[in-house]
Image 1 (cartoon, one colour):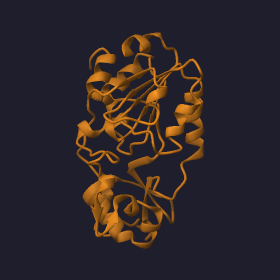
Image 2 (image 1 turned 60 degrees about the horizontal axis):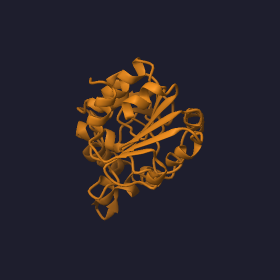
Image 3 (image 1 turned 180 degrees about the horizontal axis):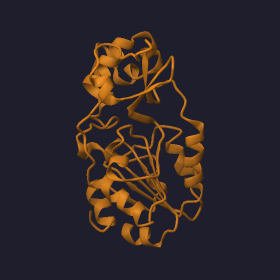
Length: 238
């Protein structure tokens, strides 16, 4: 059914979350066994990924980031390659992702809207010079620019607003979509989950997720199957 709808749709958009990257060895976040259910030194992972924690405990923030959040050896899985193939064939307009791992681009996707940023990008808060994950992983303590400024990851921390220009682009894609495929996300984090509300009345909604979401009742198709297999099959194999 999904493959047929992909063939029929002239405007298809993909909305993905942490579940898309679990097959690449990156843990998910909000499931019963996800990272956000865990704690370090009495603090939740969500607290340790907040803007106030970054500002007030920068060294501890980077220690946590290196130990838990960064996966420099992660590689794209069949889901990433399937989406890249669909884009190359003109069947997918955009990938909208909550993930910060950059695996969509590594797989070959070109039009990727990273609403929560990218963990491979860092910038100096003093001069704006840019750095990558290798620089951060190779440094000790708080990574600094040669100018002395403290680096900040180019990701949206808790307590920070999303890039409004990027969010507007995502809304535009959703507003003209004939088909939206949602995969690997619980659809509880706003404003990203609210993108579903911008779909035109006749647009089809497909949700591929292990656990129920608040939008399941609105979906035209809900699949509890392995999303890597579903997407690979829908793309005709990768």
